[in-house]
Picture 1 (tube, rainbow, N blue to C red):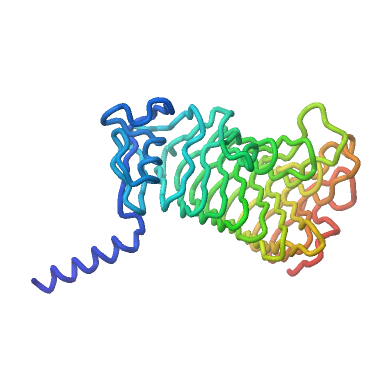
Picture 2 (picture 1 turned 60 degrees about the vertical axis):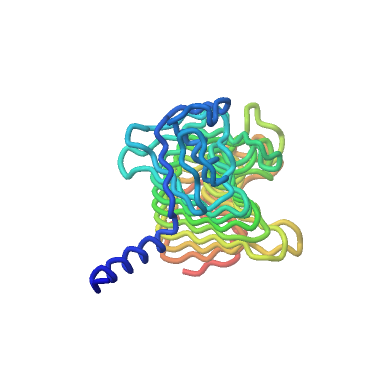
Amino acid sequence: MDRRIKLMLVIFLSVFAQSGFANTITVNSDIDDAASVGSVPNRCTLREAIIAANTDAAVGGCSAGNGSDKIRFQSSVTGVHLSYELPAISSELMIAGRSRNLPVIHGGGSFRIFSVVYPARFTLSRVLLQKGGGLGANPLTQHSGGAMSIETSTVKINEVRFLANTAEQLGGAIFIGRGSNVEITNSSFEGNAVIASAGIYGGGAIAMVADDGSLSLTNTTFEGNIASFPSPSPLVAGPQGGALFIRSFGNQTVSVSIKGSTFSGNKAVHSGGAIRSESTGASSTRPEITITDSTFVYNTANTDNNQGGVLGGNGGGISGETVSIKNTLIALNEDLDSSHPDLDSAVTSLRV
């Protein structure tokens, strides 16, 4: 064989191997009908594509998955309006949209959009997740994670917009459970909400409640997310963490890294207008939170001014236990019930 051909073949195989996703399934329909899965030849819906990827079998007009799969959208598919929560993702899968005119996956305000479960390795890029409702089939996370629930999985999210998703307990947009490692880059969370009835809940955009795992946020924006009461307000301490709520339990480490990100206009009815972190139990390891080159402005804690709760909130910007902060602007935040508008007094480690 000619040396040049050999070299080209080696380069091709190298690039192919590094891509990690050898098989592509193309969604060519914006229809979502859970009752007719696989019944229409030549039609490939997002629901059918996920089933094909999970099972490595052809479904309807979707080609069979083959180990590591990539789902893409035909240019004519501008979005999908869900009739029910999509099948749980349990394989190695990438769902990739477009850099312009992001495909919209709409939960209708009633259903969670994605559930990611063991042993999934899931990558999501260049889509808009809108009005997920947090209602899913798993009873343990049924009212958490309006757009996405992640359990014991590895997830990478890049250039994704989370808009107006809601949940009744934890994580208006995303809930992260135990044993998961999540990386989010170049994304935005806008107007997501947890509307919950107790202070054990929270995370208007993201909630992570785990005994181990990690969350990395890079070049990501959180704007106008809220953790609030339903109406009328119950007489208890309210939901916490307008943007992020982090709770660790057990003796392993939950780590959160925030780089080059902006938190603005987020609100919590109790502690942590932008971020609330805590641990449960005397033997629990505190979450390790590192914040670098970021901005926290115009976030608000204790938005009910302690009218509905037995406890007032703290930390208009950040409320937590062990937080390392470097080269970060934290200013113009509000705490409507105490003298800690930017940082809660419970922050025990501040490294600048």
